[in-house]
Image 1 (cartoon, helix red, strand yellow):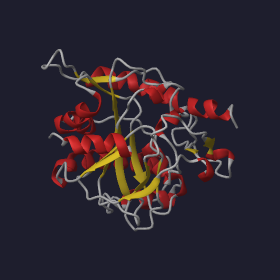
Image 2 (spheres, rainbow, N blue to C red):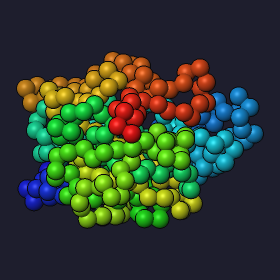
Image 3 (cartoon, rainbow, N blue to C red):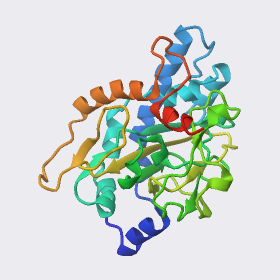
Image 4 (cartoon, helix red, strand yellow):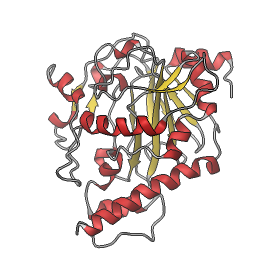
Amino acid sequence: MALSQQQVEQYHEDGFLMVEDLFTPSELQPVMDEISGLVDDLADRLYKAGKIADKHADQDFYHRLTALEKEFKGAAVLIHTNGWLGPELARLWSAPRLLDIIEQFIGPDIAGHPVWNIRSKTPDTKLMTVPWHQDTAYLAPGAERTLQPTAWIPFIDANAVNGGLEVLRGGHRSGKVARHRLENTAGSPGSWYLYVEDNELPQGEPVGCDMRMGSVLFLNQLIPHRSRENRSDKIRWSVDLRYQDPKLPSGDQGGSGVIVMRKAADPSFRVDWDRWAAEQRVAYERQRGLNTADPFSTQVSGMWMDRWRELA
């Protein structure tokens, strides 16, 4: 799929672009099934460890993790920090129709950025509500100079009720990273999020990004955005997948490196997912400071905390 020149210009001018109905729900179903497998595996592990009394296998994709969360606070965090890249999600990440759009933003050489996420936004779960921030603040200084578009893809109709995204239109135009603070030093001890004080946000128009399942929201790495509270009775599942020119600095502090997805000089190029995924898992644990001694720890640390703690 190709964007119009007007859409490309809108992305660069506004810092975001919503492309409606890029996928059908049936095309996203394999990724949803793969995520369901992660929840099933987590339920088995929690049950065997005596952390829960019921695996809630009767619950569906939009309710099961919520039921697990009620028995074991932090179940949603464990899904978020799992770090396993399944083949269906990898296939979506490198889908030609996504890469065709990214090519219009950054050029024909495309890599996936090692920071990607599965978002398990369970209802009324504070740790799943992300405050105002810029994505590049989680990377090393200087990364803001590399254009790193994000594809944010919900697996449900996303809106103001169930925790859809809100962006500041044009808030990326200065090219600068705003001062970020650590939420876990501001009354949220379990949080790993960064945030920008309201009075320090770049100028921009707040825009709620309500969107149908199958639509994709493309974000500039410098545009301030946040997710709203989920006040519905369903989980707002989503993924965010990032891209950049492989020749430019990534700002990745974990050491796994980017995954090349498209080469202009080699139209027959194919992604070596197996090798990269193995290397990325090790780097992911180092990047996020996962506690391997306790497989059910919900504490997350990372190098971005050191960057902004020094400025606190």
